[in-house]
Image (cartoon, rainbow, N blue to C red; front, side, top):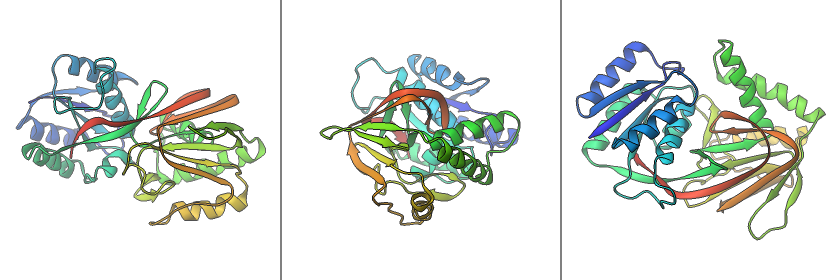
Length: 312
């Protein structure tokens, strides 16, 4: 089988020695090419070119940003208008190498890269694959969630800190979230959400769209905004009408519980949605799979069931 291993050498938990070992293990079973990414967007470009050239399997080794880029490149290479992934669609696999590895965890893969490599090889030998649903934010695919507002501001700030050489640790995320929370209290965003068959809802302060449950930026600690999301077709929405302490403090405790199920008068939550449209009078920060994409005044989120064939 022709395969491409896409490696992000800057990923948090990868080392040169470890990358060499897992590449050697994969090459023993696959006709393997290896690409080390050099700039933002490189993984997507290389993946799309490889798939168009006949590559049958693409393996992402890095964090969730690398996974997202590879997925976008793989799906970009599909013919326009092609439906759900079928038995002939290119395969996708993950060897986690970042700090959060949300999608890899959702697939049930081990956190250790070598153990994950072994799991992928065993799955290939047994021909174990499954199709998973994804979301699309305008023209960008996402594997676990996207958000507008507070969470996206946090992602943008952590990205800037990483560019200065700081680690994207759970502690940094928590401190950054608190700092931006206080800013949001002083200058709250106002979002309008439109859902199929419902009247638009205005005056919302944060909107998150999820394709899987749970997700996290807090190490091994799961975050549960929409329990059960990903078990059925469609996207899940989690939005807040208020960012006041009386809403946020109990909410944080609830979403960090193992069986968390947040609800309340200031929470707008929906499941199994085919379409979500979010707009704002002023541009608002947007993140997709933990990757900051700039500010937008309107975003359309679309559910795409059975979009991707995954080795697992």
